[in-house]
Image (cartoon, rainbow, N blue to C red; front, side, top):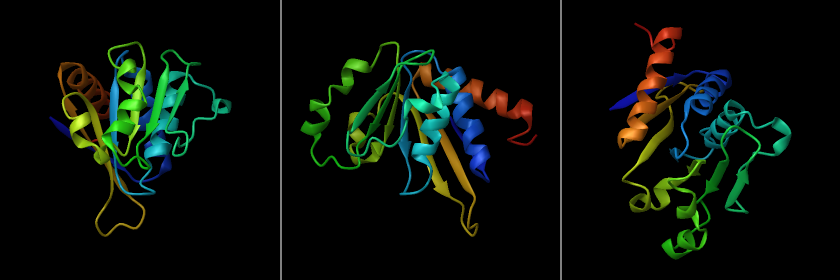
Length: 167
């Protein structure tokens, strides 16, 4: 199942991220794709707010640190950026697999750098610019596995109820 969510402005990205943060169960993996500037980090910051992580916790792109853990919310947030990694061994060295199947929400930016490493589970979110629209973006959400499918169904139900997806 795939779901396209229109993101006409930063507020829409904020609302989607907070919804994910409020609804995501422990053990959620978010696989984030999109070009530079598409809003991956902004979405993760909104997810953090939805988890109850305060703004002063410093949720920002972990491009140089590669991974940051924020434990101030209802679930720990493990924020990973794979942009600078070139070899799958570097991915193993991060110890990211230790966070899977646990109590955290793991958000991985640039997951397309290592597509085989995360292909079997999680909620994939691809942020893309709309054709012919200078500012608008879409978030295309796709679920792999029962856990992610249940979350995606919840997200769709809430967005339908509030009219974000139309009738």
